[in-house]
Image (cartoon, rainbow, N blue to C red):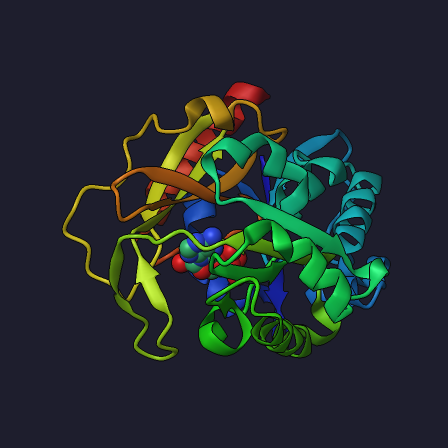
Length: 302
Ligand SMILES: Nc1ncnc2c1ncn2[C@@H]1O[C@H](COP(=O)(O)OP(=O)(O)O)[C@@H](O)[C@H]1O
Ligand SMILES: [Mg+2]
């Protein structure tokens, strides 16, 4: 049972400081912990990235917990670790399935805001985008790429109040593209905005915070249901534990996250799926409990 974390650039024998509590919880749960050099991985230097990991004499399964990786970076990590006798449980194909929005969308579609997307290869001319967004009529929409939004720039780079206001659409999209810069992943996703039960607005960015929860699944079972927003009090109960189990069963990965939200009408919907290795925790997480459940699930797989 191996866990792979990124090392602290200033202190390479230690994990990146934001993951230090996870690292300790992992050790306590009985995982062996390995560190990789994230900057070296991103720059394509795999021998340096994996330099501190000894080659295993027998194959060992592993999970990564760290910064988001592009599909190419994940593939390089996967192959590099394999050459050292470590098999990441999530294959590159499974990572892509959960990490890039269009891949898992067909599975969540019936429970998710209506969405369309445009690959970046085709460019984002106003004509192409306006044409694609005609599908939404006069409805409000949100814009993101295949991985992330600029939700903290809600009004200028995420939310478009009326999809057929081509000027506003183009302006918000351009600003989003500008903010994403080189990191724009895959293409653009346009989603119908569904009014959610609001909890308030974010104290720093002013974006609306809603009743949202992140559910981590391992071996098809929910192992953790976390309140999504640290800055919003929410006295009500979260989603039922078995909500969307049947949908989760169709996701092609053993370890993923599912973000769910409650509409103003009280229904629950699925906002997105994420790869469990790179999905963040909110402060609500009980790390010892999370890693003990991960360890128990892992033991069953061995
Ligand atoms: N279709 C939608 N309808 C209403 N609110 C949405 C919708 N999509 C996203 N949001 C809101 O915007 C936030 C960010 O969207 P998300 O797609 O999760 O981006 P990111 O992955 O960058 O967090 C969500 O947490 C939710 O509050
Ligand atoms: Mg999200």
